[in-house]
Amino acid sequence: MISSSYHTFQDNSSHGEDSFLVKDLGGNIFLDVVLDGVTGHGGGEASQNVAQALSEGSVNNMDDVIEILAEMNSDFYHVGGGKYLLTTASVALYHENTIDILNAGDSPIYHIKPDTHQRISSSLGGILRTGGTKLIGADAELHVSQKQLELNPGDKVVVVSDGVSDNVSLEELLEIVRSSQSPEQASDTIKKLIDEHLELGLAPQITGSRYRHDDQTAIIRFF
Image 1: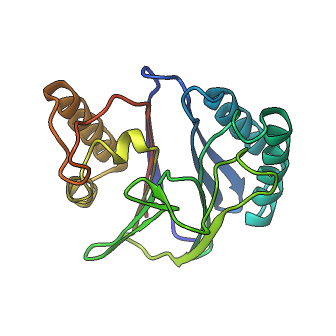
Image 2: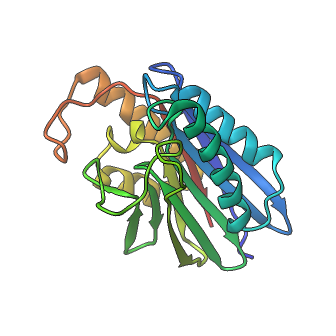
């Protein structure tokens, strides 16, 4: 397994509905999870409960993750009927020389190499793909997308809520992560840039609208 270092940041001052988990599974296998609860729909409770279940549950592989998410999804749907207790889930499970990725909802994961990158998400431009995933708690059955990627020394992986991805452009994110000497430096630079964008009220070119105040969570891992 390729060694790695990571850093996290979270600003939950807007809604208090993001949660995250970094879990060492032993044997140099580890799990990074970002959960973005839906504002006004019990999102904070949902994201916290999923993070706690994954933290306390027995997880050795992605099947274990799916089993826990399916149980939480069923519980949420039973209580909320698909309209309450809703959260995204973006999961990166690292083992040997691979990354297993799972998405439910639109919180993205970026796999960044020196010259290429992939943005892995269940949405494009904030719109869920037809036939794609649903939020945890939105349907009686769990709907997720999965992907496995090769992992190499020098790769960098960023798991974020949309309070991050909507407030920095892809070009800015890639430049910061690639030029940073450590995940801590990348984390600090991204957070500072988000704060500047929000203070100035600048308009992101991707959406054509103003940057928006939202909870911000990121796990940045360098290999």
